[in-house]
Length: 342
Ligand SMILES: Cc1ncc(COP(=O)(O)O)c(C=O)c1O
Image 1: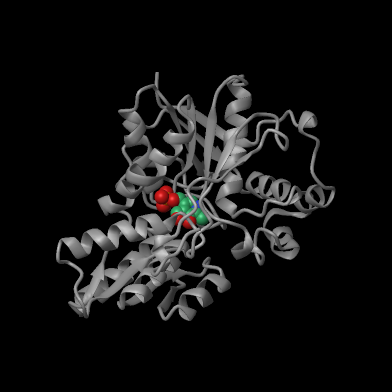
Image 2: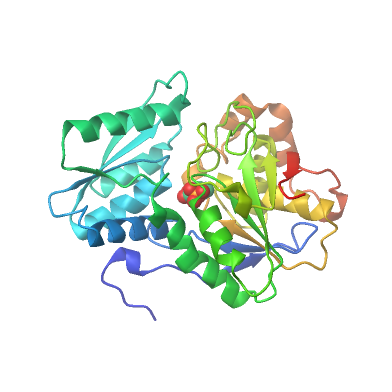
C-alpha cells in the first residue's frame, strides 16, 4: 500500500512489458506513465523544482514559466499546484487539446505559439516568448529543461538505478531523445556501472538533434528543431532515426495487444526492434523506456482522419488490417541508423 500527501510522491518505477510475444526480439519496455502526471517528466520536474528551491531561485511569489510540448507542462502543473506556485506553460500548435485542458484544470496558464521562428522553428519561437516574459517581470523563473542539470540528474538518480536493480545483466538500453535529459542521465549512470551497456538513442526523422536535416514532425515528445545543449554524443553508442509512419505502426501494433502507449514509445520500440534485428541480438538483455501512455494521443496517433491526412491511406490500411505476425516482419523500420563509435 502507498499512502501519499503530495502527488509527486507516487511513481511506479518497477513495471516492464516484455515485448517478445509481440515483436521478434525480447525487449523489456519500462513503463513511465503510471504517476499523476502520466509521464516520465514528473521526475525531471520534481528534481528541477526542488533544486531551484534549494538554490533560493524559487521562492514564494515566484511564477514558474517553461517551454513544453505537453508532458513537462503537465508535470510542472501538478508540482506547482501542490506547492502553491503559479505556472505559465508556453507550448505550440502541436500540443494536444486534452493536454492543454489538463494543465488548465490544474490551475496553470497556457500560451500557444503559432508562428515559427524563421531559424529556430516552433521551438525557437517558444523560447523567444519565454525570454521576453522573463525580461518583463522578475517574478518569472524559467527552469529551462534544455539546460537544467536537474533534468538529466533525475534520471541518473532514479530512472537508471531502477533499471540497474532489475537488470544486472543489461546489455543495451534504448532511450528516446527530446531534451535528451532521460538519455544523458541514463548514459552518465551506466558509463560508470559494473559492466558496459550500449546506449542507443532513438530520434525521429526530421529532428536535427544528431545532425540530420530538419523536416516535418507531427508527434510531440521526441526530436528537436534546435540541437539540445545538454547532449554529449561521447556518451552515446548508436543513434536510430525512425520515420513517423513507423512510429504509428508500432503504436497500433502495441494497441492491438491492449497496450496503449504514447507516440514516442512507438518511436523507441520501432527503433529498438530494427536495431536488434540488425545486430542479431537474440542473447542480449535489452530495455527501452516508454515515456508515457496513449490516452493523450487519441485525437492524433490513434485517430484515422489525422493519420490519413498526414501519412496517407497506406498507413491506415495497414493498421486496419490488424497486427502483422511477428515472423512475417522482415523489413527494418527505421530510415537511418549510424554508429557513433568506430
Ligand atoms: C512523450 C515523451 N517522449 C519522450 C520524451 C523524451 O524525454 P527527454 O526530454 O528527457 O529527452 C518525453 C519527455 O517527457 C516525453 O514526454
